[in-house]
Image 1 (tube, rainbow, N blue to C red):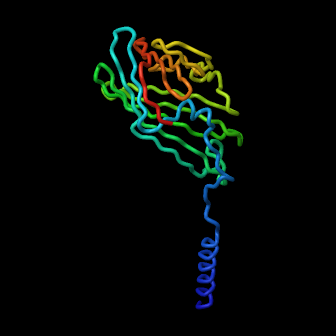
Image 2 (image 1 turned 90 degrees about the vertical axis):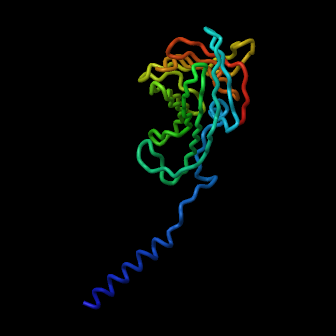
Image 3 (image 1 turned 30 degrees about the horizontal axis):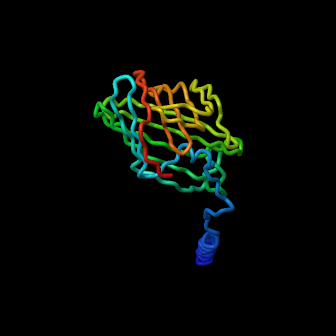
Length: 216
C-alpha cells in the first residue's frame, strides 16, 4: 500500500514539474495578428476625439465624443472563428457617447476585431448602439479581407463601397467609405482619418459634420 501511494505521489510531482516547465505563452512580434492599418485610419479614434453634426432638416445640432478607447492582443482559443492558439489577435474597442438637440442620451460601441475563417484572417468593424430613452438598438458590420473592403454583405442587405470625394457643409472630404442599408441608421459616410462625416437616421434626418477634433 505504501508503495502504491509512493507511485501516486511521484506521478503527482511529475505532473507539477511538467506543467511548471511548460513555456508560458506570450504575445510577440512573431505571433501577433494586428488590425490592418487601413481600418484604423477610418475607424480607430482615441479619447479626446469629438464630432459635431448639423441636422439639415431643422438646423438642430448633435455631438459625439470618444470617452473610452482601448487596444489589446488576446490569444486565439482554437476552432473555426476563434483563431489559432499559437497566435495573438488585436482587438480595439471604443465607447462613444452622443447627445442631440432632443437631449436624449445615446451610446454606441465601435469594435475592430479579427474573424478567422478557414485559417484566413477576416477583419470586421462593428458598431452597436442604443438609444437609452427608447431602448432602440442599431448595429453595423463591415468586413475587410486582404486589406480590401468587402463590397456587399448579402445576409444583412448592406452595400458598402469606396467613394473618392464628397462635399459636406462646404468642406470637401475624400477617401470615403459609403454604407447603405443598416437598420436604425440608414446611411453612413466615413472619411479616412476623420470618421463619420454624414449619416441618415431612421427618421430620415440627415446629419452632416460641421466641426471636429481628432486623436488617432
